[in-house]
Length: 70
Figure (cartoon, one colour):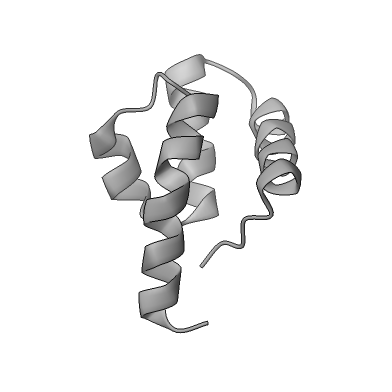
């Protein structure tokens, strides 16, 4: 996958991510820009949850949406 494809996939999934984690802002998603570890930290921060719970939520999201991170 080239960088244009990764960027396009990210733009497509931003809406799905906002559906799942509505407290994340557009600025959060711009800062994350497809990086799983960054998303993990933002979810922990916004929702006040432990790393293990944020990991579980992201894994569930990945399985439902077949998303591949950069």
